[in-house]
Image (cartoon, rainbow over all chains, first blue to last red; front, side, top):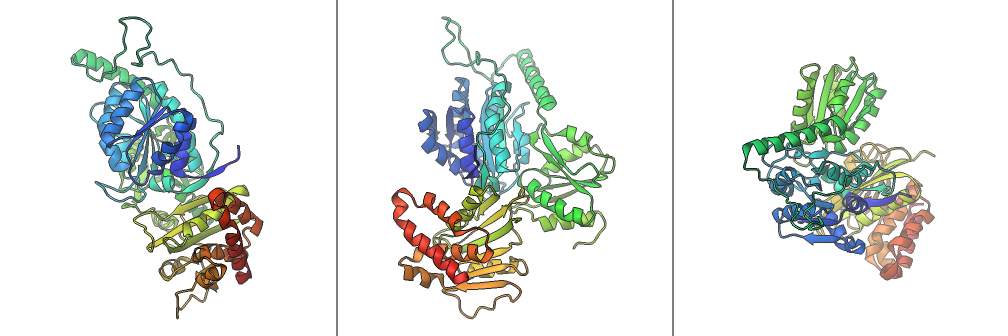
Length: 356
Length: 180
């Protein structure tokens, strides 16, 4: 199908419909408002459910309920709104409920700003809820990659019975770019939702219950270990990343989302100057793509993390690196997208040249 | 011909700078080019400043953020002051100088000044000043033919807005003539 020019938020909303989203529950917040706005018009055309809840806390609990009944559910918000939803996300992980969560990240902490940021890295990859749980999360780069992942996310969430988050900076939500919403994406074989509490077991007296409460310690530990097994499977199977011009690189930049696109421009400029620089681009933020780091060549003596936050992903780079290579960090915060020139200067400094 | 263009369109909120920029992004999409349109977003209000950047390329667009534009289209003084310094050397600067007097423009850029407000009022509606600027822009850059923009107009000015088609086409043509 021909590509259509769409705003990021609207394209994500349409991608969710195409991904089979049955119901949306959310509460407005900039810079993601076009997601619910679009769905408020279009969900009913598909005979699906749209509810604007009275708060983020209400919305995430509606998500819990609908997911528990077996529906494919979406919620979207931006950083402070996601913070409010963390309790519900922990409960969903505990109750093994699938859902897709779109986080269009803005500056923080607190109310912060409404400008683009990646300052949610920790809340996206670690979560803000209690207990041993993980949320499979993606940090896509272009609008096309974003919509492809939104469509796939419903399958992935159902497969693992776990929330899946798409985390994009505000720029991706606000910008327009041509996208193809019908291109081929991987489909997963999904088991029937025989766990759903939908009153359709067919047997009198047999009922499904959805709980995250396990008062018996042995029982809870068993549950925790079962969840762990699932997270281990994600770590094994779901790491996604892209490596760009890393084969001969002396220095490799680690960046995701919009920053990765800016870094692509940096690579073009610096390669012309003879500086061998590459890009390792995490696509999954959790699980962090450790496998990509194993593939880096010996020549890559240094890793430079660049992000729109002050060193959150850099902590993961440090952990994966285990002291093997020299590390450097460059970040902007407050809603500022780093410019190609300033990243290029940072690399020139690191390789011993002088800034242009 | 290889196409690679980065442009910033800026003006007061309500002058239609976002729409003007979107016209370029739609035309680029129709021609199978890669494009990214980015709006400034924030506490913008009618009368405040607003801007958008558009990157158009026949190659993959790396950085979607435009920091050193090839062209700047400024519809008011604050926008001119903000974006003129960012313009590349020998870049294209198109200014609606309706309310700009005694401004010292950079001398290392290609300058086109148009009193788009006066021209728009002559056509009967101040609000088409943005499409006059769009006409000037496509004429000066040669990036799109008139028909490519007309195709976009057909979608934008349909239904209830069909009555706005004629005046917008005239505005586009006026801008093209003034920049020729």
